[in-house]
Length: 505
Image 1 (cartoon, rainbow, N blue to C red):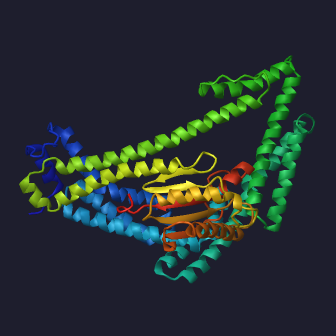
Image 2 (cartoon, rainbow, N blue to C red):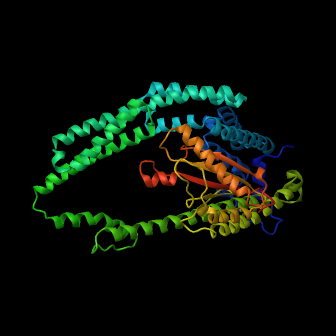
Image 3 (tube, rainbow, N blue to C red):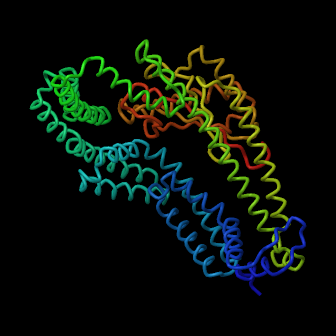
């Protein structure tokens, strides 16, 4: 006789608990719905997480076939669950879905390497709103890229790369067309408005800055040079043109009013007062704006650090809650007869107990790694059980991949962090800002990742085959490329530690 979810719910509700840890059910619709939700969480937790990870890695674009098959198996499992069909069939579809999502993620990893510059061209076209302002070119590029992804899944890497290169050219053309429409056309209109408002008299510096940026963007577009510079310049030109219009209007009105310079400066202090108040800080302006600005930035940094810690605590609590919920679900309503029907329930219980213990050890190791670095050296991030060490304290000479001697001591700390997980695998990821050609940036990011990999493998006890170096070029920014500070953040190396499920925890 097949064991169904409906039968399981009836047993959970009607049969008295034998286990001392069982929670008494109260009966009724609410109790049944709660049991159903608990079972669903236990069954679908892993596959839902796999779906989220695959989606986040853009597997729907880079591995469309495997992603679609995985999603269909998940849809079928969900449909069967709602209909109360057998757990055996539901678990079968969930396992098939997990397998396909894993395959999709592996293909996506390969695609990020094979399609590196094409992916960046696509991202740039998205930023320029090419799907709206260059719709036909965008569609042609998307069709060509989809073909490349399908061919890559079939195993023909060379042909896939050829199609992706064709898509890249289309994306770049779409981006250029979109930049002209999205930014420059409106900027020209704003400059005309600024002229009518006599911005050359009231805000000459801002107006000139807007004009210079327009010329820079036009030159880049005309020469088909660096589209990142063209897009950023065009966007900044639009912003400064609007800024000139605002300043001209504001200054003209201020001159015609009875307000004094003191009134103007006091008015300028108000935004910082409001921001300070929200941070429980009262700024003083007796020496100008510099000190209160620095104090506010420090407080914001503290909040960001605390937010990271709270996010980690929330993640840990959610994981532990999920594991405890699975444990509770498997304990409730279980008797000797039911154990015989469920087969491997005891093994599953012990595995959950182990995972709960491992979760606590993972957090301990995270704390150990975090204490190795100060805030100017590295930022530690948790993604699942992975540890990302963002080496903000490491930089390279412009256009080079040489590790300079002053960073050896810092990299020794990275070695200590890796030693905390002796059986793990390590990914060294290189990233650049968006200035310069996509191909050169990708190559530079790979070279820098390789340099760090070679240095670390010569100084740690972990085997070199456990290390992987990969470059993403400019494709994964963490800050805006429109400012020098943002570009500095994007030029980075990340050491990603992948602990195994067992053995090194």
